[in-house]
Amino acid sequence: MENRYCVIMSGGIGRRFWPFSRTSCPKQFLDFFGSGRTLLQMTYDRLSRIIPTDHIFIVTNEAYAALTHEQLPEVAEERILLESHRRNTAPCIAWATYHIKAIDPDAVVLVAPSDHLILREDEFRRCIDEGFEFVARHDKLLTLGITPNRPETGYGYIQVGEPYEKEICSVKTFVEKPNYEMACVLLESGEFYWNSGMFLWSVSSITRALERYLPNVSSLFEQISDRMCTPDEKAAVDEAYNLCPVISIDFGVMEKADNVCVMCADFGWSDIGTWGGLYDVSPKNAEGNVTQNCKTLMYDSRNNLVAVKGDRLVVIDGLSDFLVAEADDVLLICPKNNEQRIRQFVTDARVKFDDKYI
Image (cartoon, rainbow, N blue to C red; front, side, top):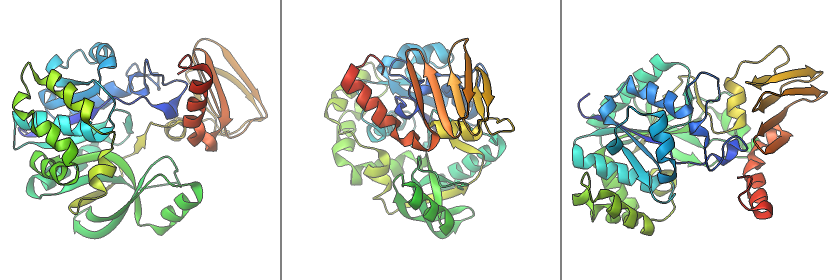
C-alpha cells in the first residue's frame, strides 16, 4: 500500500451532458442522483477506501480550484494540481507522473476519471488490487476493459488478444467510438470490451512510454523535474503547458505502445459522461421512464429520460425514447439515440449566441 497512488482527472467540461454540465460547473461537480454527493465526491470516496488518502491527487483546471476545495475540503492544497490550459489527458498524466515520481520513484499509479459510476465496489477493489500487483511485477501499461452489454456508441472499444495472466490479456487494437451499426458488430464478436479510461502502471513504465511515444511532451516535464514538489512547480508547469500539444493518452501512447494489456472486468461500471449512460444506471418505472429529481406526469410515454432543475411539473403525452433536459436557461429535447449530436448542438449554440448558454 505504501507505494500505491491515484490520479483523479477532473478537468473536463462534459459537453455531452449539456445543458446540465456547463463550463462554469461541469458534470463532475454535480449531484445527479440526489445522494448529496457529486460525481467527484463519489469517486474520491470510492478510491479513498482503496488507496491512502494522502496518495490521491486531483488534476483539474485552475478555473475549478474553488469548486474542488469546496467539495473535497479534506484534500490538501498540494494534492490538487491545477492546469492552466486544457490539453487533454496526455499532458495531465505527464504532469501527475513527474510529480509523483519526485515523491516516490517506485510508485504504482491508478489513473481514473472523476465521472464514473461503480455499482459493485467490492469487485472493483479486487480488480484494482490485482492490477496494482500486476504492474508492480511487469513493465506493462494496463487498461481496464469493461464487458459490454449493449451496442454503445459513446465509448471506445478494446479488442483483446492472447491471455496473459488471469483476466489480463494482450491488446490487439483500440477502436474509436463507433456508429451504431459498427457497435453491433463489435458486441456480437465477443472480442471487444469498452474502454473505461482507467489505467494502472508503474511510474517507471509510463515515464518510458511517454519518452518513447510523446517525447515532445515528456521532454517538457523532464526539463522541470527538479522543480516538482517545490514552490516553483506551478510556474514551471504553466510554462510547459503553453508548449504542450492537445493530445489524449490513448492516441499518444496506448494505441502505439507494444506493452499494453487489458484487464477484462465487470464491476457494474458506467461512464456517466452521457445522458444514455445516466439512463442505463437509473431506476425506471414500469414504462421504462426515468425522472431525475423532478416532478412528472406521463401519459402513453415510454423509455424517456426527463431531467429538469427546479420545482416545476413536467407533463408529457405520447412521447417515447426521448431526452428532455432543462437547466437554467436551456431546454433540450431530442431523441435519446441522437445524444451523440449534443456536441454539435453546443457548437451551434456557441456560434449563434457566443458563450451565453455554454
